Figure 1 (tube, rainbow, N blue to C red):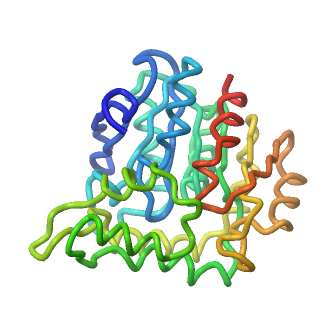
Figure 2 (figure 1 turned 120 degrees about the vertical axis):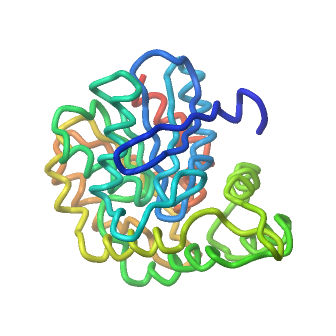
Length: 282
């Protein structure tokens, strides 16, 4: 993606550190902030943000600290609460008190934490394939995404070829080429991902020690849960098992749950997801 379709780049300074972002749509108006997952970056929201901008909405996709092109801060500065404070400061910097939030994977937990931290500040929330603790059998697959960090590759093409073999990113959409190239930086022996493995591991440990279900009572605003109807790999685990989907729908008053015929990664490139989100914010 190039030009306007790729989003306009901007940095935000927060008390936690510098956050890099990509913005689509009008420069004025209440924004919809998009929060990526554990090892993810802002480019994962390209299709969603394009659809929001086409609907006349202001979309801002963030690299959380330690990811993508945002600042890597010292150990002890991560966790959902710290990220939520960053997000709320970005909302304030956008000149708005109330904000819409879309969180994918760990970004959904940060979105829920922001709702708890600042009651009344979140106007609408979309959670993309995350609401409770991922099941234990999903953790080895999650760690595959972490393992790419810190390693060097001879070229960007080699890096992309390795990621294609993992079997979790399916179908392979052109979005993923831009997504993974965006996070690369030149290394002495080739290229490596900018995202900090230490930051990711700190957030992973934080998630192990905190149950996202404790944040459900903070969701007193209109909330949409998009659940991946396909497991992470064939015959493998879901990130949101059916029992978590059903418990969430019972526990969160007025929550809407929509199944998307994709897995945890394919959900952000499936045409149904941007359309459902645009309708929800429209």
